[in-house]
Image (tube, rainbow, N blue to C red):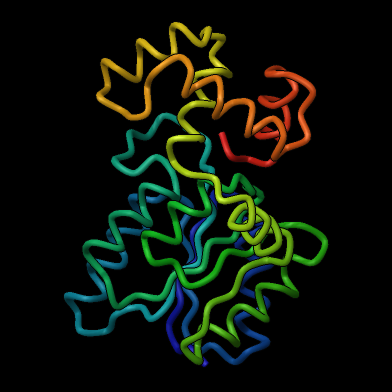
Length: 220
């Protein structure tokens, strides 16, 4: 099991719950932080002292207060760590379940994504056991949703198209936006065909229904 772990969450009660799981697993050194900047400095100092952390467990959402922060979210912290501490294992423990966020974090090299909830601490323990052995862990609902998404074969272009639609733009306006952004295909007929395919794919009755469905899925 890991011997030195840093927990980052702005709620002390959450930190204590995570710490209790780590203590159960005989983790010898558990350090807590309530700010992302504070966590980054602790990681940096530990590495300079020759006693680096082996694992970071972080939330994504942090409430702003009077302190100015360079890293205002767990996502920005993970991105920086991916660049500056590539050897550090990372577990995200968050209530956030938007697929776009999870997909981006996976690109940043996180080792596990655990959803907070009734089974959160149990799944966190499962994640720890898997990550320490070089594996990857995703909460069941996240894993299932990502699997559904891959089966739907949704491309980045589709997501941008639906995002523009969600902003209230007409197909003519979307076509103009795509042309200015040099994104293809961008003709009005291509956009109409793609939206028709997406409506069929998501069993949507109309464009408004389509936007509602993909928002619920966390795709936009």
